[in-house]
Length: 237
Image (cartoon, rainbow, N blue to C red; front, side, top):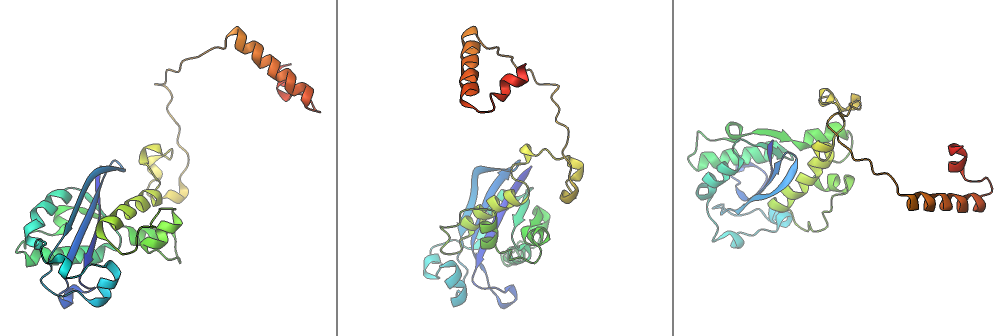
């Protein structure tokens, strides 16, 4: 199973007001494990950045002067995410901006929904933690994910943090789960599954005479030091 955890930074909050993407960060998960593959790109937006937005992510228009346009990196980006399940916090925001960029780039037949399926971790977090704050920072704190280096929002850093939060929130490494798969859709009713030990071939290592003698001597020392005697010796008898 291939998943891509994605985050973007933008010039402002509303696509309808002409705001654009300025940074994309993606982290790859394969079978719920982080790989070394990432996609990270700054993008020249061809418009000014709102002051309030710049205070959040720290990216200025001057920093983007020599960066490519979205149309120039679109093919590489689509290649990276195609066929994956996208994991996004507040997916409506990022998907709306990405689809807008595809249209502006003349890629009218390309949109996120055709490339990928999407998991939105915001409603998922609200379902698991109703009535609580479910921002990325709040979730990092709740799941003990270190976000101490997050002085500003950054797409790649936030994608890395979200990957760790998502894995913790959905049960950590899937291969370690001992819960029956038929309860996956209803984790509150999950029951432990039976572990198949039929294929195990465990070696039996028996103690040597010297090891048995040392064991008996240790039990004797415990028996003498304890007011109630050595429980192990009573069990043996």
